[in-house]
Every structure is written in structure tokens, then in C-alpha cells.
Length: 404
Image (cartoon, rainbow, N blue to C red; front, side):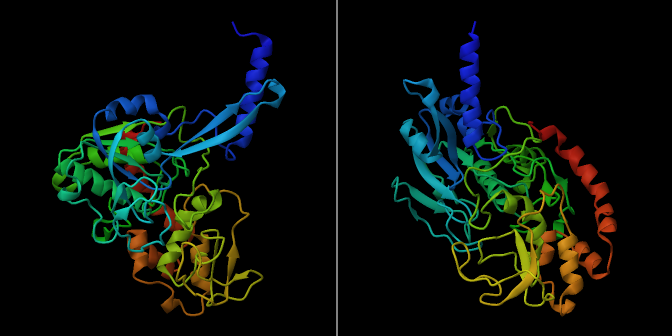
């Protein structure tokens, strides 16, 4: 039996832990990477490849005891998965890095070259540019592949496209794949138009909505189960689940998932604002408020303006050195769906509507219908209504693959 005093001390320590964790993170949530007792035995005596980047961390709260319990402190320990596995004497052979590179410092779409990690000496194979899928020779000597990337729940966030190609390569080369699951920071939001097959690209590979409401482990199970890999092949897949998590729990990422998603607000607004990347409107690349503001030189003058300049994550931002007018969304409440109101407003008020959209918009939307609807003046309510039948069918399809 635990004494009342001990229980109170335990509660006090727990409260301290919760205070230092990122806002709205439940103390109980553990990522697949933290679920070490489940996957370490599977890696023992194996030659391991790892698909990861700066988000592949184990982040734990550490209680620092002192002689006086009142002075107990809490610190945060973060270790990268690669470093942790090496400490555990796991035979890591290679790192496979997606868009933005292993350390997450490259611009969106920037060519990533193969190389060597200066901290561990391990070779790095780029999975971006012309080598999105590992070649058989790049997989020689790998007994098991580990995948640990933080997704944000949007179809055009390319980590799930990298997942597809990794699964395909592993299936073709008879390499088991271990996916270390991570919470979806956009929870269970399922919204937006479904991708139509003819608009398949690296920013949209599967017939899913813009917001899919799944964790990356669940998504891997769906790719396998729906036989979306080439020729319907299936990967030998094991998903290491998160512990004490459900998709309704708020989750704040300990590490930003890419250079231009710096905080919770940007991650929450990403799917809604990323559609602007298919227009002549900036989403704040080249500022400190990426995916939290939007604007262009072609929108009406307003109280809010910004001027993009080259910075970390945006060497050549749209409208570089030009004054852009638009809206600041940094303080708005968290959105719970795909919002179209800002896109529609910008189109309706831009100086020249014929120059608003570019060819990339259709790839991002996954359909031509959305652009046609906006250009025709269709209301947001009617546009949203046009998705509903497809969304219900998708929710039914994904149900067998959900873990939480």
C-alpha cells in the first residue's frame, strides 16, 4: 500500500512533469520510439537501416531527486533514435533521409545529396529528388528497416509519400519494415476533397482526403491493406504503437517537423494554407510566421503587411523583398477542419484573378474541381457539401486500419 504522503509527493512530481512538457501534451503519451521494450528485441542481431530525420527523437521527462523532496526538479531529456539505438548496441548500417534531409535543414523541394552524418559517421542516403525510392544496391546488407518520421496528417506532406516508396522497396527486396508510430498533431480531422487518380504525384499518391485523420502507423497499414504499392505487392509490416494515446488528445510536437512548420499554430493551419502554394499568395515563407500568415502584393492594402526575405528554410521565398498585404492568423483559435475562407477571400479580392492560380494548385488539391468551384463563385458551404459522400466512404475504408 502507498502512504498518503507518498501519493501526494507522486502527484506533486507528476504535476511538475506536466508543467514542463509542451502545452497540452498528456504526461501518459509515449511515441512508438519510446515503446522500446516492444521493438528493441526485434532489432537484436539485425543489420538495421533507418528512415528518419530530426523528428525521430525519444523525449522523456526526468525526475532529478535531491535530499530535500521539496527541491525535486524535472528536466527534459531528448535523444535521437539513431543515437539511442547505437547506445543500445543495435547494428545501424545506414540512414535514409526524406525531404529536408536528416537534420531537417533543407528548403522544401531542395535537392538533398547523399553523404555522411558527421555525428555518427553513418552513411546517409537521400530519398528526395530523383531517388525517392531506395535502389536495390542501396539496401544491400539491410536485414530490417526502421521508419520513424513525424507526420502532420495532410495528404501533401511528403513523409507519407516517402513511406509508400520505402514500403515498396522493402516488399520488393524482402526486408521487414518496422514503423515506429507517432501521434497525429491534427488528431482525427478528416476533411477536404479526395485525390483523383489522374492527379497522382509526390504531393498526393493515394485516394485520400487532404486531411486523413490517421497516424503514420495506421496509414502504413492502409497502404498495405488496400494494396496501393506497385503491382499490389505487400510489405512485411510491423507497427510499434504509441502508448496511452487516442486521436482526440491534443499533441504538441517536441521538434518542428520541417523548417517552415515552427510551432503548433503553423501545424494546425498547414493544410488550409498550403493550398496557397498553388497560387500567387505567400504563406509567410521568408518570415518568422510561416503558415500562420498569408499575403501578396496583389491583395488590397490592409493594416497587416509583411516582406519576405531569405532565411532558414526559404532561400528564395515567394515575393522576396516585396511588400505583401494579407492577414495575420497567429492568434486565431485552433481550426478543426480544412478552412477555405481565406483562399476564397484572396481569390475574390486579388488584383487579377486570371493570374491567381498556377498549375501546382491542382496537384495540391488532387482535383480540378476545387479551382473550378472557387472560380465559379461556389459558396464554401456548397464546396464542402460536395466532398461529403467521398469522406464517408473514406472513413469506412480506413476503419479497419485504426489503432487508437
